[in-house]
Length: 516
Image (cartoon, rainbow, N blue to C red; front, side, top):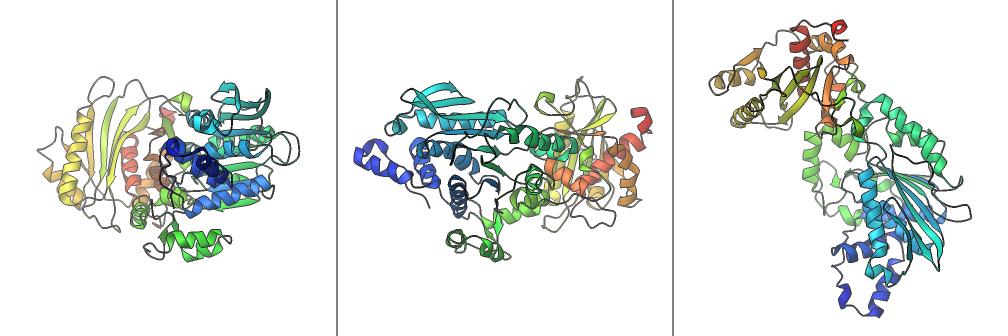
């Protein structure tokens, strides 16, 4: 439900006063009102926002001290929890100090700036004339009659957190500590980085509580079976989680029945009148079509299971480990390796299929660069394609890679395509259309044998992916889920990686000892 945009200047003082008083009724009412006023747009409320509101009220009343919320991307969690809730607490409570954290400094600073802009706005100050005291984006304070009463700190999970706190000594609610996306998705595939993240939760963030009763809230989309949510729920931070809210993108009757009284009825009203597919409704029909969500589940099953359904796969295929990938890019931002100054050469591997049905395999093209004894995935195309689309996309992909030939990028030396079914036809049809010859890759041995042949090279951390690339999550999850008994969901991306490792290290006759 959404109210139309408010024409603030057209309202009388009495009408404005009534709206402001209504906005103080709850955190959600406050968010809806002030988002509308400052953004000039309606805040489109769904049932899950009432679940947020339920949790926030529990925290403010002292009934739930430590809370974990898991929600799909785009669920406006940050709008509620990180932008508006801190300001609501300042309006409703005598003295508040809040510490907001996130993996991204730019993101947490942006959230803080929006909160600060709200309290500075003419509309807000008409009713809440706080004095702006300290005025830094990551540390700002409000005062009344010359006395500091409220403070908001913003810090990144990898930055300097010591020296700041959430809450004050005293009875009742005086502020809280919040982790809004504490984990960076790419970092979750590294056991060392997960351990470091968990250690900072315990040794750094936990110690920032003003006292043992200061509330702690963690909000994130799930990304790994051992992410911060799992760590918190297992008691790893030394906190008892009083409330765990899990909101999947697709909801069924069983899930709806499990919701608390009041939230259940709102969920029924929001979703049960919309279209149902295979027993599921979209959790937010006004924003996400159930058909789009089903299509996303089909296209990106690992991403959907974890980040959208809050149920990450175990990734225990037993052949390749997610922890054995390296990531290249900005080392200061978290990458393991910088982008090489020069590549020795580049090549392409392709695994093809000529059917577009959702139950058929995928077509994958991957461009690789070789440098410093490692292979770097430079670009990738993945999709379900008919024969005509396959030819067009493959030609464009190869010619795009060829156009990058140069001193730094190296020469595109080979294009490898599996010599099987659709691949055989593609090799024949592309012979005169490409600037270099396509090299057929025979499939004379089974997939497991080929995987075991290159397993050691992958374990030696010789496969590098672009840091913070949107294709990484599905790629890594698929490779790490590859099984010996062929029970995994898909292996098309795994195939192009196996071929790349095989061409460079097996056929290239390079030993791990030489590389290390």
